[in-house]
Image (cartoon, rainbow over all chains, first blue to last red; front, top):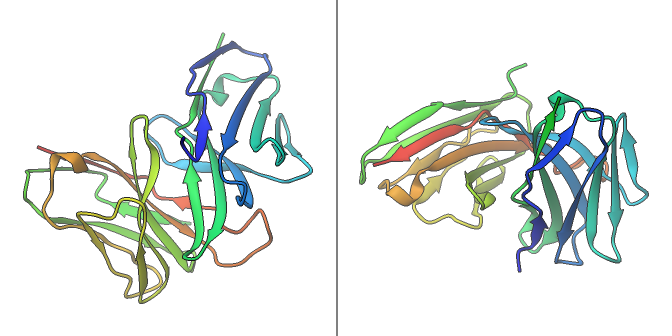
Length: 112
Length: 117
């Protein structure tokens, strides 16, 4: 089983729709969580960190469920510019320091 | 601000050739890492460094060497290129410490697309 798993998609949604992505992680010792956005043929960029109590940044809401070991990202009122691949990233502390594990990403296509 | 700068952006090598991918950051970050990204595999850590003079292996280190003589630079060397090393390579840096949820944030360079024939 992969340490971080995401549905690869693609999710094709109309502009203005609400879309949600889930990500599951296998290691209960994971401590911090992030969503990154990656545009086609570009580098990943941080979208938002995910806090235990859940957090919101404009149209984006991230949730963490430690008991079920999953993270979610909700995008409201989708824009064409939201089309990208969304990477779930999980960090845990190991003997060698921090270990970041990246999911393979979920592709979102927002259409007119 | 330049952030993380990678060169070259594109490179084609023949099997057996060696080369160095350059990475520099101007944010005074202590942590630097090299990843490769392949279809369906996600980003995989090759090597990382927690400070000048300190490097360690990641998940897929074979065939690559690194050194960290300064805080700013973290070059990745391919010793003898193989077709299996065809990939997109990303360098990233991260600040040490910081508030929970903000540390360990990776700042990526634009990537190097490498093809090995």
